[in-house]
Structure formats: structure tokens, C-alpha cells
Image (cartoon, rainbow, N blue to C red; front, side):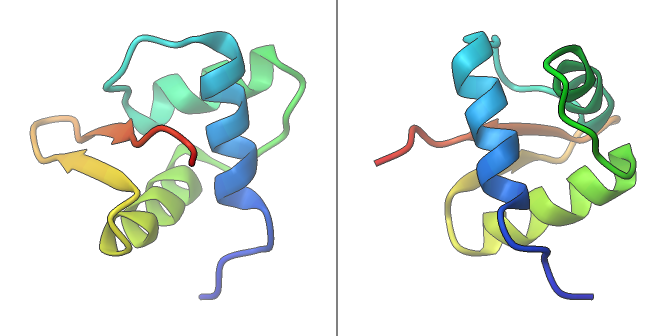
Amino acid sequence: MRLRRGEFERIRSVITDADAEQPLTAREILDLLEEHGEEFESAHRIATVLGRQAEAGEVEVIRDHPYRYRLDEPQ
């Protein structure tokens, strides 16, 4: 499954604009996106997007239960 263009940027933008305290679960991120008028498929999709960005080093995955995500500051 390929990332849809801009999904990570949308997530990062809302988290940054909301000045949200991190780390966050995928469900918390989904709720935050909805509060800011951004539609997203599911918490699972958010986890997929952030997991792939973690491979690039832009997201830290905290492997706890539930997983939590910390996004690096945009450059």
C-alpha cells in the first residue's frame, strides 16, 4: 500500500498547529485531526503512515501498549 500524497504532511501540520503534547496514540491523532476538520480513514491508517515515516527517521515510535508516536520538528 503506497502512501497517499500529503498524508504525513496533514498529520504533522495539525499536530504542530494544535501544539499538541507528544507522544500521541494513533487514536488521539485521529481525534485531533477530526477536531481540526481533517478527515482521515482510521487510526490504523495513521499508524501505517507514521510507521513508514519512522523508517525515514521523521517519527519516533514508542513501542508500548498502545504504540505512541512522536514527530520530529519540521525543518
